[in-house]
Amino acid sequence: MPTDYTLWTLVINLMLTVVTLAIAIAAIVQAVAAKRAADVAQSSLIATQRPKLVVKHISLIPGKLVDVNETPTLQDDRQWRIACVVANIGGSTAQISESSLTIKRLGIGSLEGLLPTLPPYDKRYSFGQFSIEPGERKERIVVLDANTDTMNLRLVHAMAEGGSNTSTSPLICFGFFHYRDKSGIGRLTGFGARWNAKDMSFSRLEDSNYEYAD
Image (cartoon, rainbow, N blue to C red):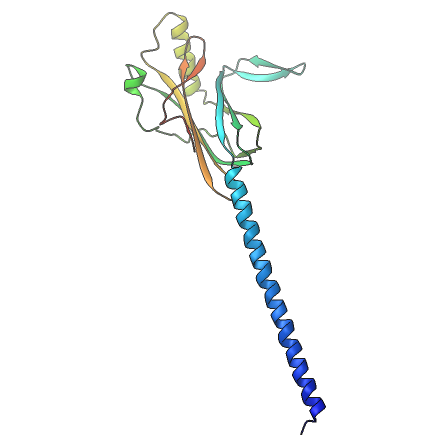
């Protein structure tokens, strides 16, 4: 039979074990609550400081740019290029996971009458995967196929310089950037522009089906 001292020792040890266990459980609960609060705070911060991509400029490079005495110089090339300047005007990093550029010559008529309601995206050309920090802008360049798109651009430009009216058969380019923030939320920015064959410049389509930003 245990003595009174031994019995009290067992009781005290049991009580200490229970108290220790309760403290450990309370610490775990507190840690979980703190993590949840931190996750909520981070999600709220990301939501208020979300990234936002906008396309600032689209241009045609009729050849390729090479460094001559540390100066970018245009040289003729079988393949022409299209450059796109995209900026992050939001408050956090944007990670571009997918992008597309499509060049399309429409039929005979006005741009308003020929422009498809929904952009027929062709994933033949891509700007690749990259990231843009808040306040940063980057220029991405796509190299066009020599035997199709480059040849078509050369032909239409030659026609315009020769005095032909190329505006009745509009040539447009359009595309999108799909990107995610740090929490994995995906967003989409679209762009579209019409090509002026004579001076080889682009002007915005001013069409919300093509130009948008989530």
